[in-house]
Length: 310
Image 1 (cartoon, rainbow, N blue to C red):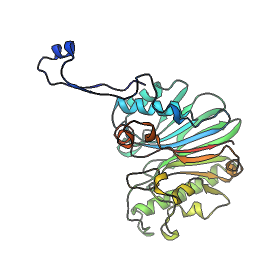
Image 2: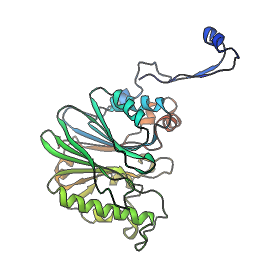
Image 3: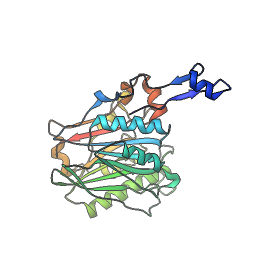
Image 4: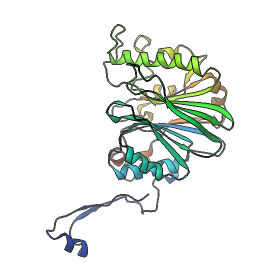
């Protein structure tokens, strides 16, 4: 992908400047224009399913440059499904989709302040996407209605549920205050648990997103308790990351680990297979200016990967 070229003009005669190129500064990628900086970041294989959750922070935060960086990353990672949060600009999202041959994109439109959920996904076998739709659309606990991708992988039914929970709070659940941020996140988890039980029993379900809270809080203030207390039905595959050093977390500037991947019991066996991998993808390691370049042009969150063989 070509990076944008920024020209700062200091001569009064623009035509003369364009002709001579003698005054001004340029800022561009340090890599040649035809080189993908993320080329060595590939995680996908021909036989595994890869799902990424990625908050793109007010996409596209640096305009066309962001589109180019994200397109490079998605192309290089070679995954199957990318669940996105904070996709604000529909025109730039279409440009991102257009920049990815062999991919399709879907963006919801109902979120407050246009902070919509979206998907990018391969449009070829073994992944088959049958439908994408919102659920729980009138629930106060959910400021962004969960976005479901339903289909199959290698002939096996698959459901992905993309989320972006309410932010902020004081790390305490106020049980009788429905407007409390932690209470809303707890209630959102309860709603999701109920919906999955009623609609997707016996189906491979992957719940992803920016959940805006920690997995490791004490039980009385843990908004994910409904999932954590049902280990026979659910598993947060990134729990070891959340319990580990902050160098592995998805939100480095806090630092905290807010972006999670939850699976249902129908995928437990798959998690035990050798090809399985769960990790935060430190994409800034592939950029010449590191985190500052990533944060300026892409996001303040890092993507989280689940790779397995269903």
